[in-house]
Amino acid sequence: MRLMQLKRGFRPPGRGRVLSWAMCAAAFMLSGVQPPAQAAEGKRPNVLFIAIDDLRPELSIYGAPVITPTFDRLARSGTVFERAYCQQALCMPSRASLLTGRRPDSTKVYAFNPDFRAALPDVVTLPEYFKKQGYHTQAYGKIFHNDDKRAWSAPLFKSRKPMYQSEKGLRVLEWIKEDWRKINFTWHLGNGKTKTKRMGGLAWEAPDVPDFELGDGDINRRAIATLGELKDKPFFLAVGYFKPHLPFVAPKKYFDLYDRDAIKPAPNPFPPKDVPQCAMYNWNDMRHYYGVPKVGPMPDQLARDLKHAYFACVTYVDTLLGQLLDELERLELRDNTIVIVWGDHGWQLGEHGMWDKHSNFETSTHVPLLISVPGQKAGRTEALVEFVDIYPTLAELCGLPRPEGVEGASFAPLIDNPKREWKTAAFSQHPREIPGFGYGMGRSMRTKRYRFTEWTVPGTDFREVELYDHDNDPGENVNLAGVEARRQSVERLGRKLRAGWRAALPPSGR
Image 1 (cartoon, one colour):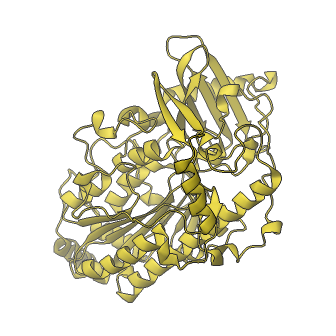
Image 2 (cartoon, one colour):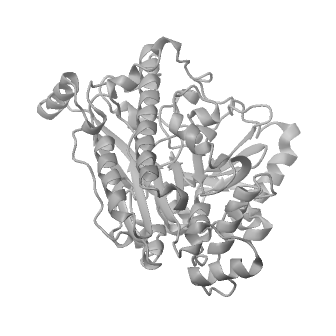
Image 3 (cartoon, rainbow, N blue to C red):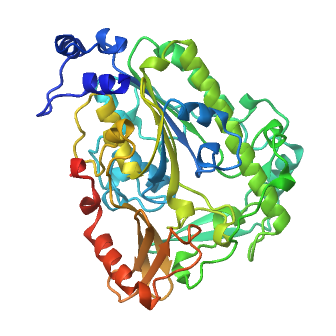
């Protein structure tokens, strides 16, 4: 009941007019329904906006053997989205999409360039929208891939803490800097553009240091201090944790929480049967790190070390988030603050023999998403939601008019009723250089049962198709697109994919 009161009290009436908080409270009194104390006092809900880089749903709330008590704590007062999807499995396109509420084909951001303002110079981003509505907006760490200064009331803070802390890690960096036998890795970004990356340092390390000696711990301290400064004004505070992004570096105490030898490797370290080559990726992001093979599969022992380190990084970030929530509660802000936590895309930990993102597989596009609204009942939903939905959702939950131009649907109704009918599909995409054909795009669609992906190159007859049946093959290990018995499913899903995201919206979002 409390959630319904909060949302009704903050929801604007039709035609874009916005009632004052006092008028909303008066309306509640006349109706005989007691509004929440915050609305009666004229306060708007704050937003604590948590971004976590390269975090797949490898959390205890999703059944993974990873120690994440803070996520468990948030789930007891929030909604866990079991089927949330990013629009592209790469940080810059994913964040550009989420923060503008537009899909990659609108932002024109498919790689690390250009910035979304090249295509959308006047777009109002999510934090900028809150700023225009009178919120103080401030950010720590990585929110946009490239910062957008228009979004913030105060300059973004990025930590200057060194990436490596151990003697070995620092020694490897010196070797790379001094040795002329450098190995370079080249990415083909399409349209003739490439990106060259020099050999990097260690892929993981476990320095015996306090939390705050690493970058994420440093930004967490600053963000905690800022909460106290903002407690008397409506705020949109964004905190972007870098881990578990490579290199997998976390304080040693988090490694010690796990039995390395008990960590199980990926159950499917091989390409899917009958998969088109364009669906696969050579995981160059990982290969450029010191000690990782430049070709071929990941050695078993190194694979176990890396998965152990990834788990340690996730638990480290979970702990930092817990410290942030503790301060929110100490300042008595929790009852008037919406907390949302998301990972910008998935990550392959050896599934299909890959160690990266850069794909349309479930392991790359499926993302963790959790939102906690004051007064709501805890819940879980299997409804399909997308990152473009976050912008309009937060606007609705805070009683703000629906932003213009967003290409998602507010999922606020799912917080009240997690089982209600919702989207029929979620859409992702990823570009790929197709040898002999040029710059192509893989467009992927996730329905309740299937993942359907179509790869094409404009101006050519190139076409490759993938179909995975999640009812019988949740690991996406067998591509059924060429199976005659599935031909009608391929044709039906192909029509649905080409009909696009608008045709898949819930009735209330059209």
